[in-house]
Image (cartoon, rainbow, N blue to C red; front, top):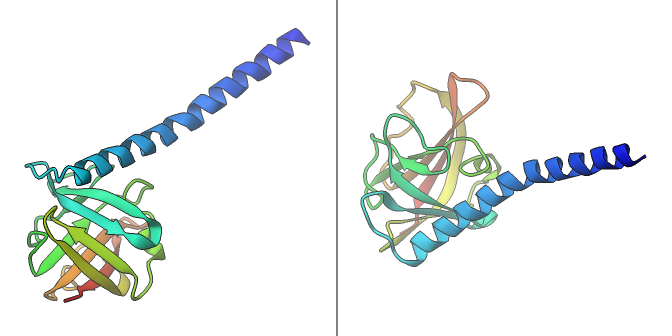
Length: 164
């Protein structure tokens, strides 16, 4: 009986440890985002932040490069700056970045900030496009959020228009 108790105890400890690591990572990431935003941390690393009130989701935005960061939203290399006419943000489809954007609806609000000015957008469309189709990203005063789908040949897109 004592051996069974020890095994159960070990199992419980290992299980709690496995569950605790992702929760700790998420808490630490949220604290980092809040601290950068609170301090208006304008530097070469972050261009600004995104806030989606529907999910109480905030994340930092950095300039994009060849590979996406698993925790950050990235300003793509074919986008204007955050205060430009066309903002295109890409992010992984994971719980730290863009897995919830599938649940955005028409007229939901998205806020993009460059740490100085907040820009308000309303969702106007959601769509799945081919990975090499860039014709969709053609409207001024628009924000596009891009994430992957289960099909490597397609991307999920949210299109939002800036509110003036």
